[in-house]
Image (cartoon, rainbow, N blue to C red):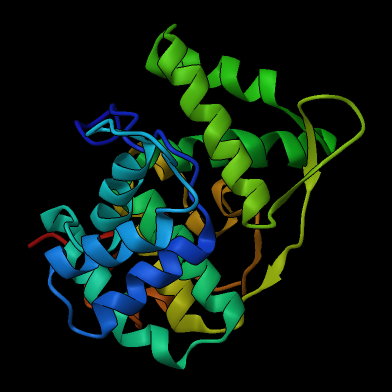
Length: 249
């Protein structure tokens, strides 16, 4: 795994409305100090209530939110800039997908939890927290912090409406699956997958990857996706196989 993909990073429960608020603050042209102050005010009654800890859960959550939308890694900046251009005209389903894509591009750990969850849902119709956590520990190490972070990501999935509690403790079923018909957003999501690191390695169809289990995506060939982004390219293998890849600088 690359350096970003080997780190847990996203260790707090993230609500979709918090990401939406962060993106809206970015769209309004605010600098990072204003964004952090606004998020601190918004989360004051929700996280670390009564805590004087400098690195309480509220401050950790704010750091994660600002890294997803403001302080993004250099290679993710063009993806983020495109997202900010698209967001105002997108419907709720597509905005949901853009927040999902930004989170996994910045924090591949989120995508890894999604990949294992989506794979289990595809295979057996349910996903058990214990199964997902065991597979995540195999990749990130037998640490309690890894299990706790994976559990918080799973609870975030429930907050986002993509998972629902099933009968039995720690057992989940698929939540609402959102229809995405915009080819631009589909191409953007494909790039987000590629930016996330090892998630789609060896996959000719990133849009069919279990990481994107919350969405129903259009069936687009790699060459069709590449027409919507100057940062995507197509590698042709054999007579009829196309593999989507990031364009080399």
